[in-house]
Length: 377
Picture: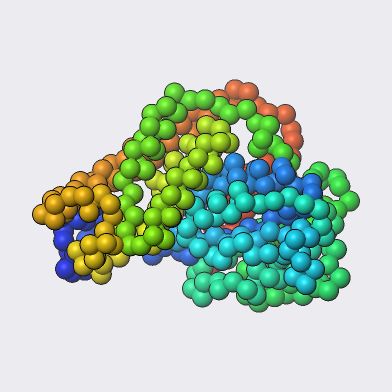
């Protein structure tokens, strides 16, 4: 039954994990998750941007544990900088909803901090109105707005109108106040979230940078496997896709620049079903598009690795790389599970003193809660 569904695709090119699927049990449909992150880039927010860069992949890994793996798209807004212009309310859309997590990471590293007005209502309204949200009734649609100034600075767009719009569109607006829970501004951030049907958290935005990374016995091997996984990506098509392959390598370097934890979290993310590159990577395209026939690609559209090979050898090379990637993904996920367990045990031995949550704690907790809430309906 399963083979008939796949039609004319060469079975030699189907990854082993797909062939192993039970043909009797229906494969659960992935639930769409549209996640939009709105970050304050005004003068005092270096810690927030740094936390987002350090912890994005940990958040992705947490979400990837959900069964079935969600169909994740991420959008990104910055607000609070004069360079975005008064007419927009000092708001800029950096990225439409996309499955390209490398592009999200790239935009985070492009963030520039400068002073300005922080209009929470305006950036929330922009995300609600400008983006093409999923129209799937089961979709989980979430906005996180993060900042540290009074939430009600906007005199043109009211928080009440935005909260009403969010409920109408069935989008959760969650607020992350980057400061102490006792601060006078905190109550306003909490009220906006509750009015919009979302959740509120306050965080220590600088905690990610000050945390001491816990080394584990699995780090070296995990890093090596991540490097091997990179070698299985095959950019097909034109120049634009070669640039996407180069961007993947650049974002590896960006993660490495933040330390071993960010590097390994990203390596693990790339082994999950949330890391999707079918728009430029030949193997991902073959695995996800049952109608795609790579043999119909023009010679100039082939990956360099296949161009260099004899035509009669290309199918064998591709089959081998598909098998290698499947094996590496499995090894990486198993090893990262051991790494995470080791880190949790070490944290229990040396508990941190009471303090505000870090950004990833807030994001992960709220994401899990709202995903489960949607699932139960």
